[in-house]
Image 1 (cartoon, rainbow, N blue to C red):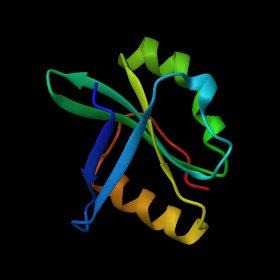
Image 2 (cartoon, rainbow, N blue to C red; image 1 turned 60 degrees about the vertical axis):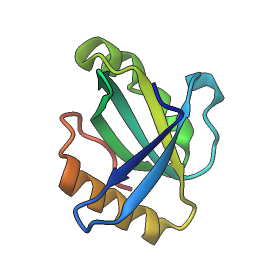
Image 3 (spheres, rainbow, N blue to C red; image 1 turned 90 degrees about the horizontal axis):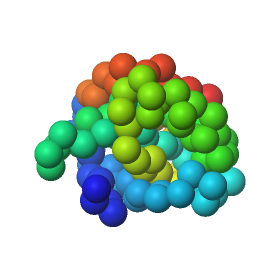
Length: 104
């Protein structure tokens, strides 16, 4: 797995995410998280959620591992709610992840 993941939204904007290797180490800061599985060198986003606390990424982690084979949680810190919502919408429109994520 890569330490950083750069994804492009439907608008063409690029977003950088950082790997959190241990879900217990997720920050309580607002942001966007992704559940990602890898197929060779290609990332597949299984879930994209915008949350008030990235600790919430732990809630469905075990289910995501079992049902979708996810291998990593990637986060993007984003305190401003309006920005977070716009970025989340842009990413979900392009990526169409199979797991339903939150959009505050």
